[in-house]
Image 1: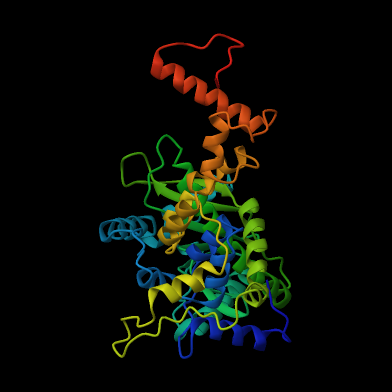
Image 2: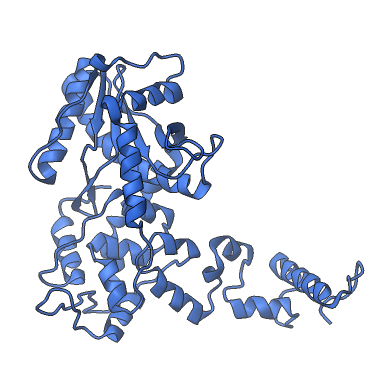
Length: 396
């Protein structure tokens, strides 16, 4: 994940040139890092996020503003639920930790839980205060609850700060990441896509904590480790009562680590760009209005290959621009990653439709072509009311 010291100056210079002179890099949070891991093949997002480009402002300048994000109502509901989970000093939260991650362990009483003050000046100070609190809690050998700790990690040669909802220190020196979400868990099961997104986000926190755990073990002489399972806390059924589930994040952690390692090679992606490529919006004096022509920006953005899929609409500010380009090219990826895998060597929607219609250039032994022709025959039969007989030539 780290960049060699020799490459840092040249990398930072490259990233500055991509952002534009005087443009401050946009910091990456856990959601952005988790979204990177969800689409590891997208060189466009890797480069823009690695360079700290404001993708939201870029999308607006391109005429394809992002339309996703939480509403104020959802944010207020989430904050209200988190406050309930952490009420009474977090005793209910610790009860859920013991119930889901350490069955048979009695929940600690109020006076047995340390709740360190993590306030400090600036993100660097807060991250340092968090690391100190984790060392002290681990050395003490008791329970501790860290509310919104700030963790530092290096991404593409630049510091990034991530903030989990909570971290619990166990008496054995292990640490648990806690993710509190406002989507419901009905009959013990939550929406799989939302759970997956929460697991990827928790994996980012686990990676950030692992570096702190190494230093903690070295300073305290006590083993310090980050647990492979995070605790996901959600409302139970249709109430506002908290329930929880343990989520194994080992797979997501490995995927995120690989994707973050790719970010340290954004200089290789940048080296393949045409000379002078930049994503600078050239804002007017008001600091809001871009003066650079949208055509120039689109040319710069399209110089980096993307890996668009419909899932990007919920995770990337540039998704609408990428979708429009994907549709213009007729790429099958615009219909979904799963379909892209099933179609094999058929790269465009036009090729797939031609194969389904019996085009002579399509390989009849290709399983994808056979499946398309069968589907086309079934559709034609359904529309005509005639069911094809077994062995009937359906592409005449």
